[in-house]
Image (cartoon, rainbow, N blue to C red; front, side):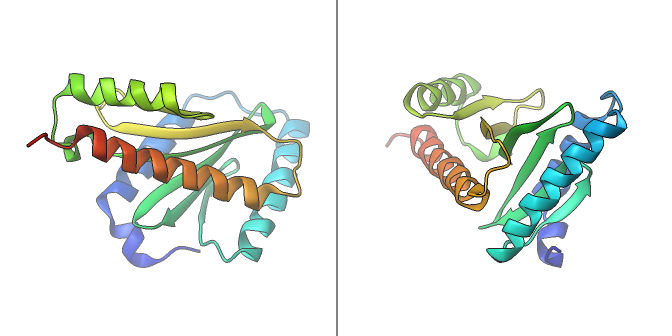
Length: 166
């Protein structure tokens, strides 16, 4: 359930690879936990479909969503089906500034914004994530949209903060 152009995007490939790498080496779920997570993800997928979101399910706890030129990843902890994490990756070299300016800008956004974490990963790319606990929320689609809006707002703020001064 994805569009072909998004899948050819280098950031999609990078995001997919990093997401898979994050999943590598995790403990296998016990069958009861796996079934609980599958039920939660199935419920949330139905809500996403009802709101016309396109996505690609890459494993039993992760969805990739190409939205507005960015790839957002929705993931659940394998051992905690109530924990939702939505994130987007941005290539660090796209910000035309020094690493220290980028880090200071990430810190400022972390200070100013609720629920969001902005940081540099081990490759120097920026990850913006929104995390929260859900209890099989029937309002998942609305919460998800708020996460996406918050991530996008933080990305725009990061672009402004790192823009070269004239």
